[in-house]
Length: 77
Image 1 (spheres, rainbow, N blue to C red):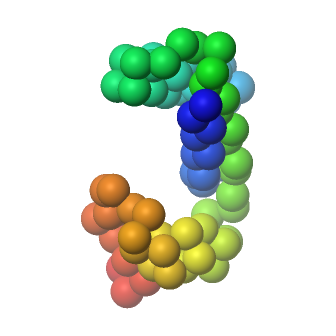
Image 2 (image 1 turned 45 degrees about the horizontal axis):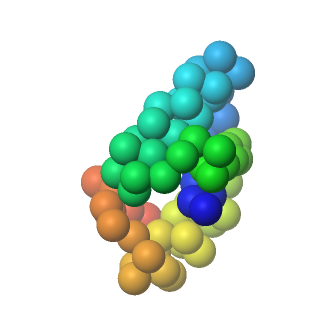
């Protein structure tokens, strides 16, 4: 039962978020071979000014063992 949590800087429309959730669902079902009824997708919006403190540091920098693709930016950028 995959649950995808996507965190991003605010500014996308509801239509974009719904389309992204559908695309993520397709990717999960295709890759993992499970039905759509088992997949859930949550999207959390953050202000750009809070991104580093509320997402990058706790979720990326402090949890490298959970990251399968590192971003091309860091705290020094």
